[in-house]
Length: 108
Image 1 (spheres, rainbow, N blue to C red):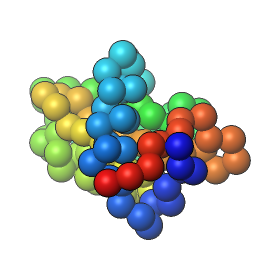
Image 2 (cartoon, one colour):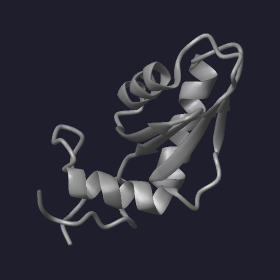
Image 3 (cartoon, rainbow, N blue to C red):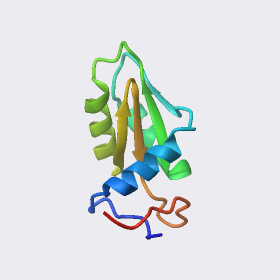
Image 4 (tube, one colour):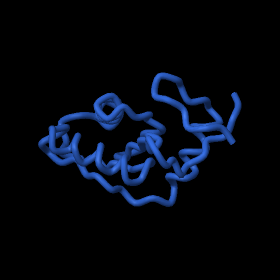
């Protein structure tokens, strides 16, 4: 097992698959409504990533942004990795700065 990647490095396919498998059982923690991506949503995402490292974001069908667009914007704002977008769900990962719990596999 490798140490958590810095955001400057890209995650490998193997690491993304691992994160997606861990996220499968998770419930969405943050919901984005018809207001779209706001400062309040960005704050919730940042706080949730600090607490959980791996989170799901549910995008309401009334949201003005598409899921991939919102996931990319959220990952950039929170300095996180976008692990997956599927349906109305985006999955973000950011290692805890002091006590990372998720161990990413090494490799390509």
